[in-house]
Length: 165
Image (cartoon, rainbow, N blue to C red; front, side, top):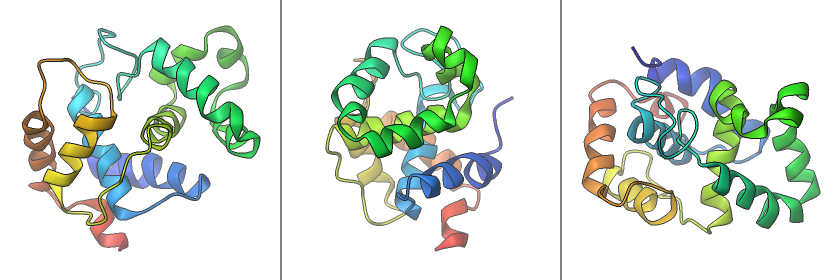
């Protein structure tokens, strides 16, 4: 059983992006599609290829901190604020699996660090698939079509960002 996509957007993705002052309907849907592609929104959480809903590897997690967030102390403070106090200090990578807001902030930071051009249309699944494929880590045997298949499964239901737009 995975996470309900409407709830995930309403209670995790949107508030996280709003706190980062980065929310757009398209970015919300891109992160939702990224989590759907990576773990089927939590249905498949094994750690092969990375931790948590977005399957972010320990190496990528460190790169985002060392090569992106470290150069923007204000942004780093906001992202660090999503993390739990004790777990982050003892095992920061575990935060990616147990803390949905923190994992979402890091997933956004992956796209931002790599200079992703986020699609402007919230319903442009093909553009989102190509953005994911170009900028987010994935297994070598995956293609934009894999993302699109998961995205279209979500599109069969009302998308949360459409109601907010």
